[in-house]
Length: 96
Image 1 (cartoon, rainbow, N blue to C red):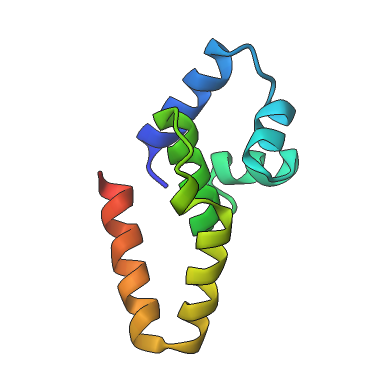
Image 2 (image 1 turned 90 degrees about the horizontal axis):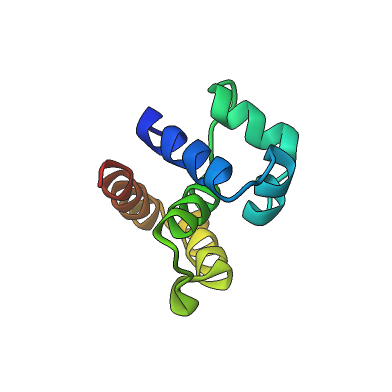
């Protein structure tokens, strides 16, 4: 996760008067996990990255919600080439 995304997430948190625990609950993770991700001592998974981007974009896409992500993750576990495709797509999203 890039430093710019962390900065934007912190700005969002402060602008909305949220503490880190409230932000973590909004993102569906624990506060300690979010803290470690922000500090760079733990990696953010694709699901968390997607949620952060959706939160910062101000939109939740119903067709690309949590169920869709779970289906993609399950398919990626079954196919090495699909897993590479998903990883490449996520890398492109991170760079945008």
